[in-house]
Image (tube, rainbow, N blue to C red; front, top):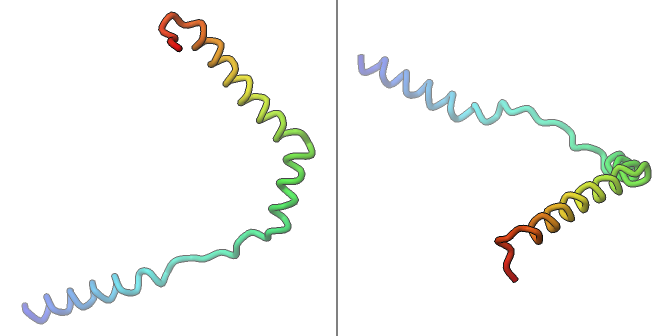
Length: 73
């Protein structure tokens, strides 16, 4: 019985020790292709439209907040 327990703990320890080695890795994205994605994001107007959408939301919030009766300066 003691031999089975020892074997179990040795096997469990070995599995835990080597389980970290089985992780899959991948090559990082190429920096040039990421730069090209950013350029096209800016050039075709998606960046500007995103900024305008956030600014419009912020402006609406400010107008609503200023009009609220609980607004205090």
